[in-house]
Amino acid sequence: MNRYARIAMAAGALTAVALVFTAGAADPEPQKAPNFRTSALGYNDTPVLPGQKWKVHDIDRPRPAVVTPGAKLGDAPSDAIVLFDGKDLSKWEIPARPERKRKGSDRPRPTAWKVENGYFEIAPGAGTLQTRDKFGDMQLHIEWASTPMIYGDSQWRGNSGVLIMGRYEIQVLDSDNNPTYADGQAGAIYGQWPPLVNPVRKRGEWNAYDIVWEAPKFEGAKVVRPAFATVFLNGVLLHNRKEVIGEMAHRVVGVYKGHADEEPLALQDHDVPVRYRNVWVRRLKGYDQP
Ligand code: MG
Image (cartoon, rainbow, N blue to C red; front, side, top):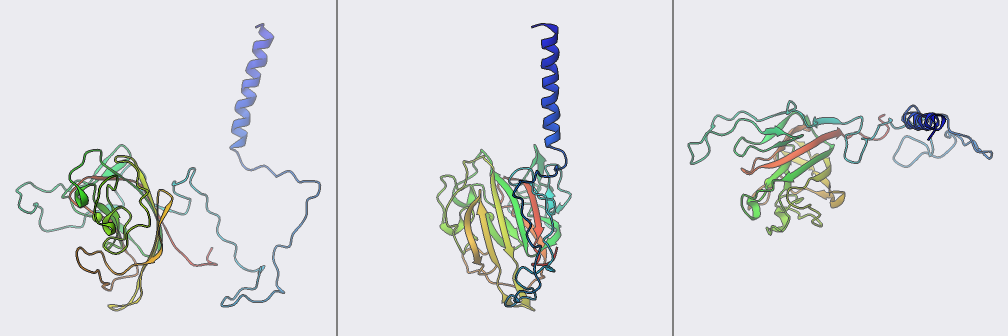
């Protein structure tokens, strides 16, 4: 290869690099087709939609807010509240308890969950972890993994749980070849509804929950609207706006007990290690609130 050929190759490589960087820059003006057409931006002479204040295609209806999605599926979008980004548990706390000893043991309880390698892990006995902030209606993304080591079977294998509002449990369990009762396996609304299917990954691999939660409404202690849960595990639907019967309960039917519209989100310490990462929420709002 002569000198000029080498220079030409180097120039070609630089052009390729420049093109890659240009592609990541601000959107260029799109090229208009020769048969480019113009469409109305809305109308004000159309009928009013039943039950709404807006007309069909109403030109005055507020446009939805622009949200930048995460770079890859599962990443937090621009309007999410990130509760764990791989580094620290500053958004979380273990509520104070007077008793720091395990039942029937002299061993002191650990005081914190463990953070390492971009995830956090239950320190068995440390206690349920809960957010400092409170949440009601929300979209929640949370990833979890069972440890490669098993500490028991059935409900002692990789048991934790997403305790929405601190009391309604979407079960976390190592359900990879681990027989247990249907309404207690991974993805169950614990003690109430089994998941529609079991799409759990192999022990030690990461699973992802995407949950849409509609909080119950109370007048004092009386429930005037129950909670509804929509749950995906690894992109597979487990519950489709399923009505929640009441609080999580073991061996009895859970009931509702009045509480606030927003409560801390909690993760259950069931005395075995389970790992979590990439936790974010979006508070749900109604239509026409950009
Ligand atoms: Mg559990």
